[in-house]
Image (cartoon, rainbow, N blue to C red):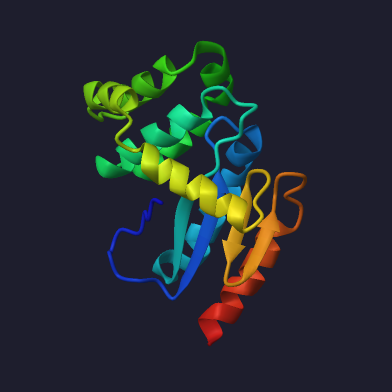
Length: 172
């Protein structure tokens, strides 16, 4: 599980975003994530949770690469860059992950090694298992408080619903 909060202090509200980096719907959801960050700032921690779907061949590797990016301190910029390349990832495979790391100034050789040695595999497996346990079936899926919101079929109205839930949590 990746916690991209920059301050290291706990935010009053936490939004888990169950995502996979080869999913076009997750790429579309980035606009909502950006809007939530702009509205709430440090009061809302947005955590990437991995839920690679079997229908996307390179999703598991992409999740591991995202963990390497978080380890190198550039998790969300990497996630956004990979989501902008879902088509290339599907067509060209894992080389897109390493190339994207290099374009962002990350240690691309370390990405390549991490994909080979599987050092982030347990994090991805744990996220996926937890997602299945709480009923995640597709991506993006959001969990805030005790509510799970499925964006895999439609994202219409989800940001507004998330904002209602965050506002309620922040008022407590």
